[in-house]
Amino acid sequence: MKRAFITGIEGQDGSYLAELLLSKNYEVHGIYRQSTNGGSPNLKPLKANATVFEKTLFLHPADLDDAKSIRVPLEKSAPDEIYHLASQSHVGASFEKVEETCRITGLGALRLLELTRKLPKAPRFFHASSSEIFGSPEQSPQTEITPVNPITPYGSAKALGTQMTRIYRKNFGLFAVNGILFNHESPRRGENFVTRKICRAVAAIKSGRQSELVLGDTSAQRDWGHARDYVRGMWLALQHDTPEDFVFATGKLHRVQDIVELAFKTVDLDWQKFVRQEKQFFRPADPRQVVGNAVKAKQLLSWEPEISFEQTIAEMVQSELNALAGRVAN
Image (cartoon, rainbow, N blue to C red):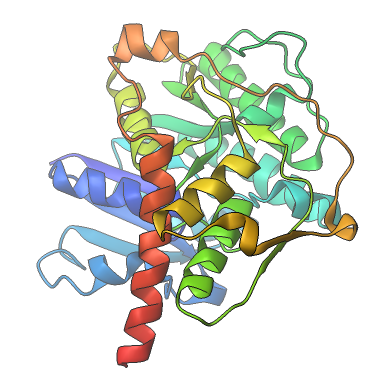
């Protein structure tokens, strides 16, 4: 039985990855922030499963700021694979928490790499990088060799983790991989992300709990995929014969407006009757063409997205409707 160690196991990606690895008969160890007490709703189904929790799934409190708190469960679990997913992951919030973002997201990756290097038997290491490392790229779509040129604190912190992963691979011989992840969503996405905000509001409007959705500019475009597809890519990257970096992306751009229209279509409502735009929510124009080319992952890992953008948004809206129905039932 292989053993895996996941940082950020409470999050969207961490919880889906834990489920995937458990389905592949791994023993999974994950660390969680002590402040949450391991109470993330994303982990509730696993913790409620008596055949899994504390049998093949083990959770440990730890803090990326505290090397000792990570080292103890890391050494005890002696993993074959490490998946480093934990970070301060909201780009907008990184401007308000610049130092925290750099400390947790950037130095946290370095700290874990150093701990990994010192283990008796070095496991394979996956670092969750981000398309934000490219900033405003001159080439589109972006690949593994697109120049790193971040323009946000989050992007800079991820760039540090990405470059250090490459350094530890080249200079210390670690099987260390960067997965350069473009935007990916699911019903487990944080509530402060625009995709989740829209889907949640649409469900509330359909249920009569909200009368309108107020947004800023909806012309911004991103390459949006589904988190379940991307965690599958993480696992495949560590099964490859050699440690290499991989872009995980759909290669397709969609607008925020597309999310709005699809979400309302899911509940058979005309979006124009419920959406109001307010200039106070408009941000400076974002002309970036941040879209990924995942041909390397397709050729070497046989990876490609299986869940469409339309399916992702419909699933997110339905999940919000189910949650509202559940609250009423309770």
